Image (cartoon, rainbow, N blue to C red; front, side, top):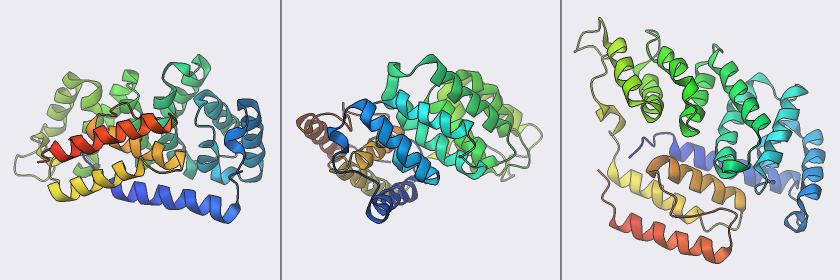
Length: 272
């Protein structure tokens, strides 16, 4: 079971930001899903020009064309409409887009994403580095293993932040993870709060709270809003490693069948 300490804030903030955008700005066109992909792309371009600061919510309109989403992101970055403080949100947004795209992402888009992560690892902003590490591990970009490891051995970095990075590193390379832990602990006394000994720090979760969180996410899979379904399945996969075939833009019957599997799994699962 992966750590879920950041789960609830992410879900609630995402839900409220989406509802706020569509309700107050009225940016979500009722006829949008009746448009073909070219019409959707044109609509997104129009919205981005008017509201570049709300790129995340606007780009989620193009759920069924991940490469189109990334093309528009590249345009935003190239024209300087994405401010430095928004890069973190941009990286977190792109993770589920890339996961959904699978083999539909062009080579140019992949190069752009990796360049974005490379620049992020060179930043002095630890939050940006954490987001880049999360993206690299989720997308299995092993060329960033050394970048993550070097952050972990930084003596000035708090242990709770290192734990998050170590989790990402372990998903990419078990041997590198073990070697990095040894480097971290070199010269550190065992009774020091900076000594990292086992994975127990990643598992100090209250079972009831975790199960409630998972139940909330599974409920969101039934949402009528594709954006919320996308966010929910992304978080469920991150926590459990499972999807049960749920596709946020699949047919209603296929989504319902997948939700039944999720509900059965949660009912049988013992969370420790």
